[in-house]
Length: 115
Ligand SMILES: [Zn+2]
View 1 (cartoon, helix red, strand yellow):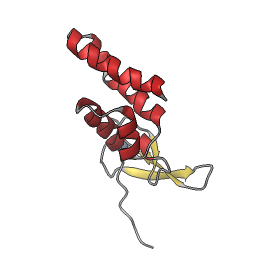
View 2 (cartoon, helix red, strand yellow; view 1 turned 180 degrees about the vertical axis):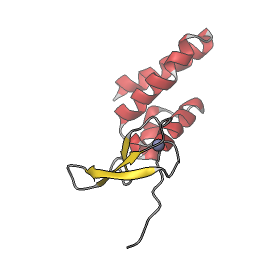
View 3 (cartoon, rainbow, N blue to C red; view 1 turned 30 degrees about the vertical axis):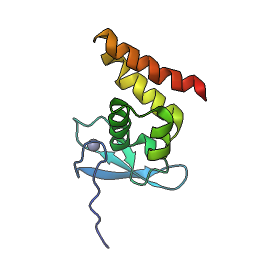
């Protein structure tokens, strides 16, 4: 029996145990790190947009002036994931910041309605 070291994609620790299967038969793991934001995770997410590393890239690209559609194309994730992440991560910071940055955030919101 081969033992594969499984690393939690959320906290990077290897303190994980198997915890059943998902509906589509993938192995689900439970992270035992009490500091970790995720309780369970799947290693091979079919959808990359759920991964924290991808979410970091969304923010990086937005901060560097990439439009939402650029981010969608480069990261191969859905537009709603990009928009949700920007709303969640950038806009709250913008609201407590200067008006110049607020204008930037409106630019991102406009991409939303362009389709
Ligand atoms: Zn974890």
